[in-house]
Amino acid sequence: MPLQILLNLSLALIWMLLSSDFSFSTFFVGYVIGLAFLYLFRSFLHFNLYFTKIIAFAKLVLVFIKEMILANINVAKIVLSPKIKAKPGIIAYPTELSSDLEVTLLASLITLTPGTLVMSFSDDQKTLYVHTLDIDSKEEVIRSIKLTFEKGIMEVTD
Image (cartoon, rainbow, N blue to C red; front, side, top):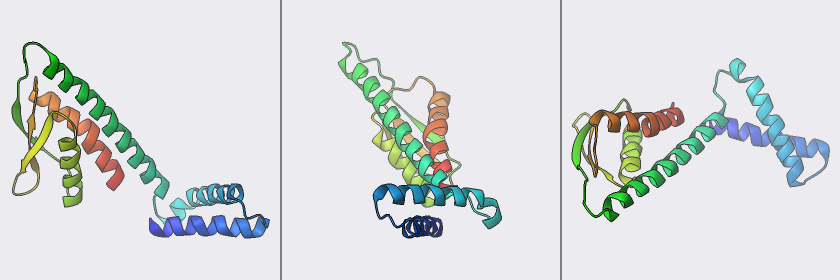
């Protein structure tokens, strides 16, 4: 990926030199042209385009922001209700992530979301023990984490 970025920036600089215009707009046009060349030659050079990872990372950030807002609303409802109807619980969340970085990122995203906290890992790092403030269905919590955070992390790191 760093080689792709360097190649793309080099193509943008070559475009600026060939056009004899050293403005940001010329650099941007060269950058887009370089990105198009990388896209066209991706199968020949046997790599995935680095820009897809950037888009996947942006999606993961947006999913996290959405989940954090929804969790804040749910926690506020629980805290501000006259009768506390929360059903706290601990679930064992099985993960398909393989590297330590991926598992740590997942644990951080879960912990940063209000109402949830990763308490511990299993010895093989394949199970996370998650405390939730309000749990209706264990399967629903597992499905939600798998479809949001774990899916996003896999898109970024694959």
